[in-house]
Image (cartoon, rainbow, N blue to C red; front, side, top):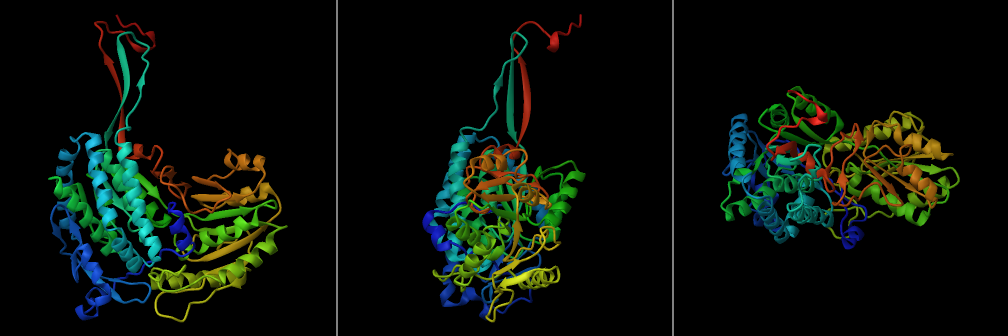
Length: 540
C-alpha cells in the first residue's frame, strides 16, 4: 500500500522506509519521555503533550488503558495515550451518527470544499507531521513527509471527484419513463488502519468517504497512536472553523477490543480494514455475520519476474527499492524475485553488491536509506524466517543477522536456492528478506507468480510486447496491481489500489473506488399518465 512520491522524494527515499516503533510497556516516567527533551519540542506544535486523549467525538477523552509510544530507532518512550473504553466507543458511535445527519445534507461540492481545507491544513503541518511519522513509525523522514503528502494529494483528488460522482440516466423501454441510478452515502465508515502507513491509509479512506457524504470513525494502529491523535487534531480544527460537528471525523484509540466492536457493530455501515490476512479474515467473518459491508486491504506476497531480455539497469534498483524500502514492511514489498536462468547469476551478484551499499541509520538522518523494524516482535519474526529459510534449503548470500545497535535493526537479507513452493517462500513475512528463484519458461514464471494465496502486486521486466500483453491478460498475473518494468511498490493515487484472493478484494483511492463508500439505487420514474409494465407484460 504505497503510492508514488515526487521524484525528489523517491531519490532520497530510494530504499528506506517505514518502520515504526511503539509497543505496550510499563508507563514511562515523565522525565524520560522524548517529548520533554529539547530536541523533540516540535512535537508540541502538533498539539501533543506527555499524556494525550485517545478519543475524539467532538470533544477529547480517553479513560481506558494508558499506553506509551516508543521510537523504534532507539526504543525510547515518546509520550503516552489514554485509550478508549467501550463506553466511550459507544458514545462516539452515537455522536458520529448524529453528525451524519448534518453532513449528509451538505451538497457534495461543498463537502469537497471542506476536504480541500483539510488538505491545506495538512500542507501547513507536513514537515512536522512527517517527522512524527518517522519518529513513531520508524520510516525515514523523507518518506514520512511523503506519506503526509499522499493524504494531501488524495484530498486534492477528492475535491474534483466531489463534482463528478453519480450514476447514469439509462434509456427506459417504457414510454414516459425515466431510469436512473442514484448513489447515496452508506453512513458511518469504520476505518481500521495498520502501523506501516499511519497517515496515508486513513487519508485514502477519509477523503473519499467524506466527499461521498459519510462520517468516519478511525481506529489507528495501537502502536502509532500519537500519529492518529495528531492527524485528528488537524482535521478537527478544520471542522470547528466551519462550525461543523467534530464527530464527522471521530477517533477511538485502542486494541483488538475496539477493532472487534467496530466489526460487530450494526451501526457501522462499512468497515474498511487494512492489516494482515489473518486478522482481516477474522474481521471479515464478524462483519459478514451481520451482513455488513467490508473493504479489505490485506497482505501481499509480491513477485518481480525478470526475463532474459530485461534491462538489468532497471531491474537492480527496482528490486532493491521494492525489497529493502521500509525495511520490507509494505504490503507491496517485493518478497520473491524470479530470475530467468540466463540472467540469474549476474542479477544476484549486482543485487548483493547494491545491498551492501545501503546506508543504514537513524530514520531522521537525511542520508539514511534503511531504518529499523517497527517492533522487537518483528525482529524475532525476522530471525525465525531466516532460520526456516536455511532449514528449507535456502542459501544465505546477504544479511541474515540482527544489527548490534540500539533499536530494532536487522540486516537486509537475500536467499537463493529455495524451491518456488517452499513453505517460507509462500509465507508473507513482514521483514526485509528477499527469496530469489530461478525459472526457465514464461509459463513457469506466470504460474509461480499466481500460486501464492495473496494477489496484491506483481511486475515483469521484459521488452517483449507480446509477453507484456499476455502478462496483462486473463492468463497472466492474477493480482490487483500488474506492472511492467517498474517495481511492485509505488502506485499512483489515480488508480484503484487493492488486490485479489487473500489480499481481500477491496479497492481504495482512485478510479471508481468511491463506489465502495456508497449505496446504489436503481430508480424508475413514471412521468406519464399510463402504467405500462416492463417486458411488455399485460395485466388487465
